[in-house]
Image (tube, rainbow, N blue to C red; front, side, top):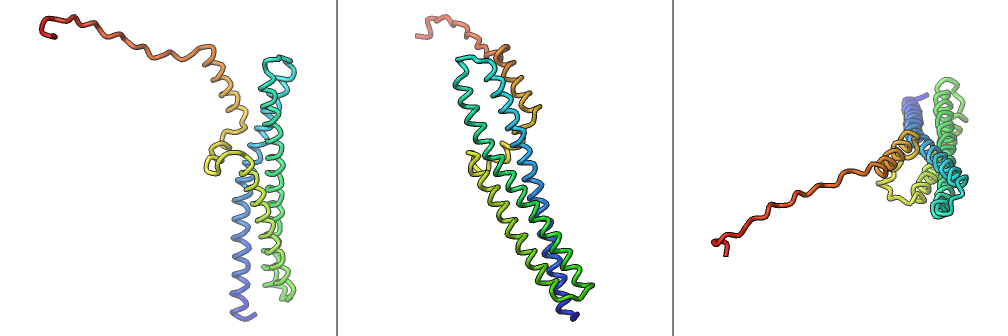
Length: 194
């Protein structure tokens, strides 16, 4: 191999490694998002099941609201699952592309470079598809994009939901004390106030 071919081979390997790193970072955040949606779906389903077993007629509005939330969360769960799956396959293709391109340095087979480029291109395509699914999920979430990470941080953990539930229950049983306003002393008018 000439010096020019070696430098091109190194650039191809570095591009593949860079895309592996980018894919791992995106995959990590999407897996966390998928897990948060899953936890939120379980919590909402549990609350819906508890309200269905109560058969209280006054809770029908809350049941309808929970049913709508369940439908939306299921749709978001499927979208998040598709994005995670696409990024898993993209990561697999990027690793295979890196391996095949690196293998070219030792085997001197000409078909390895086009094979590595085809896998690299397919990996970029799957990465874009996965990110497209993630963006569709963000769009259907009903929150602005900049508020989405804040809503997902404590979205589904059982301790957070339990803490919020306990805080709401405690505030309804033991309301916070209201600000006490002390009356001002009455000042008696003297002859000079007129």
